[in-house]
Image (cartoon, rainbow over all chains, first blue to last red):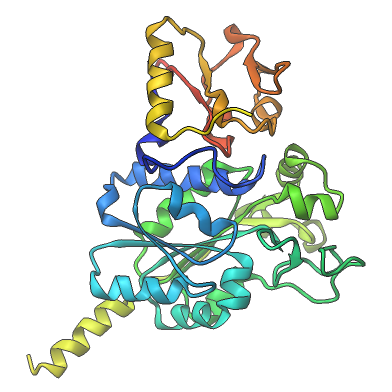
Amino acid sequence: MRMHPSYEMLRPGKKFPHVWCPGCGHGIVQGAIIRAVQKLGWSRDEMVMVSGIGCSSRMPVYVDFNSLHTAHGRAIAFATGVKLHNPKLHVIVITGDGDALAIGGNHFIHAARRNADLTVILMNNNIYGMTGGQYSPTTPIGKRASTAPYGTAERDFDPCALAKAAGAAFTARGVAYNALELEKLIETALTKKGFSLVEAISPCPTLYGRLNKEGNAVKMLQWQKANTINIKAAEKLPVDQVAGKIITGIFHDVETVPYTEIYDQIIKKAQGK
Amino acid sequence: MAKNTDVMEARLTIEEDFKKGYDLPVYVYKPWCKSCEICVAFCPKNVLEMGEDRKPIVARPDDCILCKQCEIRCPDLAIFVTREKKK
């Protein structure tokens, strides 16, 4: 008989089920990350998972990699330090939309500018979940949050476009509904040299879904199914058919020299070698 | 409310059930299930159904095509397919 393949990667001694609400997309993303690492055949010892604060940032508690649970928004800064100290480690940064783009906005763009060799998995649920549903930098304009009872007046960030503009080597977006595509995107991002970002759109049925009357977890995933277009298909469609939909796939993929390699060259230069 | 368990306890329970002769294509580890119904809604062959305890039951095991759609979408890693697809 076959055992659940992800169980080998869960931290023994930690009580499950995890803290995420019933139907939260973060659990689906966690499964995709575990499967991507297993597919690459990397051992737990060469993996480092770094996270900040937030719903998504609970993940390193449950996954049995080397892990760091750091200050709010500062996960990328800690991860850059880990990668510089030991470039052989595969460093994954787990972060949420508020954690990466509001509190840690500067760390995010500057890590992309430096091209730090990290894989950032940005779980975008369009809201601050852990603190009670305040609107975040990715809450779409007009959508409700606990601090925007009549809808937010602010425009939202596109994290993939932001990272590309700041100099990232790889940006991609996946949705929790299409967990297999997400798994492939994460796998590609992990093998990529330089700053790679995977934005995983994850439904928050408890706060975002309830406040915006989008229904339960199943309805939110069905909405994702109906409103997601792959970038290859979207390029062929007229603009008005693509508007308002989630576009998934790889947006930006270039070969670069990562920060760690340039830094090693600087060290050699300084030592006169 | 079921007692929370860690992954070692989960594996032991599941292995014991296998030894006792559990022979359905899908296994639901109930202590981890949060009754979100994602597995029931996205099963392409309608194999699963919600039971009286609000946990999925394998109602039509013969229809299962081992596609693992329930396994990859379960946020709580509480459901999985017990057989490999024959190639």
